[in-house]
Image (cartoon, rainbow, N blue to C red; front, side):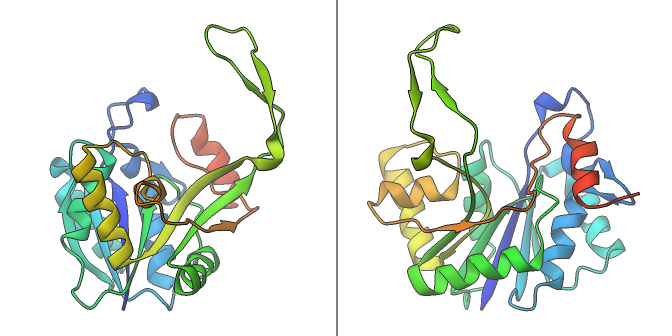
Length: 226
């Protein structure tokens, strides 16, 4: 069984709005609904766990019902950090889950093709995470705004979600995070703590994360919302 955890429990403080960014309107749907529908439409995903803030539990269930998300098996309460929210989502997974696909609900441009690509990679290698090559020239700055040196961009990638892993691997990784009292910003970093390899799945299409209000029209354009 393949399961998805959609993490939508962040407060979105950089949005400059009081509304939770996952429930802001993006065309005819809330932001999180686009991700829910992508996983609903992916034939290889069997179950979905949605993680939201406690005060959004009712809204989350309403969105799932409104858009016909039949694969939703649980709505979990988010934690104090992203890694806590992922752990809370993992606690709700079906015990038959073999592979788990973790996705940020603030990335509405995900589609079934990308989800399947990360799953294929995870089946072969234990992991598969969406990523893009860095094409811009990158400068390293030690402090302030003075350039220290130019970084070799040929070795740099930006990583996104979905990030897919065998469930035993991800479980061991997050146990290591607990043991080391570490803080990680994505699931791949947790696996890296184990010394395990993480495989990239190159994706060149827009996979925008809604971080500020300016990202909403960019996502709308990528989704061809008129």
